[in-house]
Image (tube, rainbow over the protein chains, first blue to last red):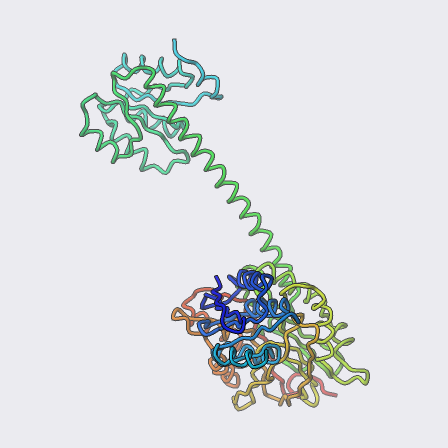
Length: 114
Length: 409
């Protein structure tokens, strides 16, 4: 389901490829992102620009991939809409994930901190 | 005279109704069919054949086209019109040149044709085809029956599990320690990933909690039931007070987090729990990823209580804080799982927090008992009757005037 693009600075851009990341597809999302991490991707931007809704299972999957990458690399998120942002705030995920306005901001920041 | 293999493989013999008005022709066909290992049943016209189909539960009919009373096509129509348990394979006997008739016969529901001039070998081949189709249909019917039975058993088990889960819940409406409590519990499937409870912790303090396990359905319900068994009044008393006896709901949440982050999985839950003093009205609460609560003052003014917190069981490093809020006499606190705000209508628009607040503010007019049900009804309207995709819990508490309901001495 996910779309991946390799950008400069060895950054992998992941787009979930679904408007809604929910119990129905969270496991598939997690498995696919885990595969690219296991395949060597260690600088990952997950872009939620086209995701309108993230439920608790979707959030669980996202935290799952963050734990997977652990200290081996960076995983940041971008493009959260206001509903997803609100969920991040209520669950304090804004303290767990580095959040960027959009992919460009994420890539620029990651490039600087290489 | 004929190959007898069919007879050997069919036990008991399959019934074949032979509808033919010519005695000679019928006798001839029946003897052929019996010779092939079937049980031929004679019918001298269409009416008799139709009656026999129902009574003998035969699955094959060989019918002449022209017969008195009910001809072959009308007989086929009548068979198809009856809602029989078994499928009846109809083979029509026509003249060799009756092409037009065949079209009409196919439309009426005839499956196959032979002519009066057909050889016994061809009749045998046609019957073998019929047997193959019937056996296939029987296999499918058996599989469908097994699936239905299995499904029924799963449904029964789930309903029993749902009853067991509901037995863990407190009364949906109650009067406890000067608080009026009203609630709604609506699983999106049969069982729910939600759980809630409220209980007297000591002579002054009421404890309450609501939990929402990530995901929903059976998987989430197993964890929610485990939590329901774990968080007893004693558990609350032991873990939700600090060493000096002051309310510390965050301490209880941290204990739960240590316990549930030990598992290496994506399961976690959100929680809102609090301890309210019936005399002073002080509410100590901890919000762990659960939506903020709605506080409705006696004049109907609504404010949100809580600004978030880490969910439980997601990160072992998570820390939790206590917050306080003054719970006035005549005010209400409404706690609502995220299923309400996230419920989308047919245009994919979520119900949203402000709409829940609009219902909560009706509390001074409606009374606390009506709030949970009003939210459930509003969501039902919002979704045009389509069941929620996530489990819903609404817990509403009103702090009553002590002189009304509770001996404050």
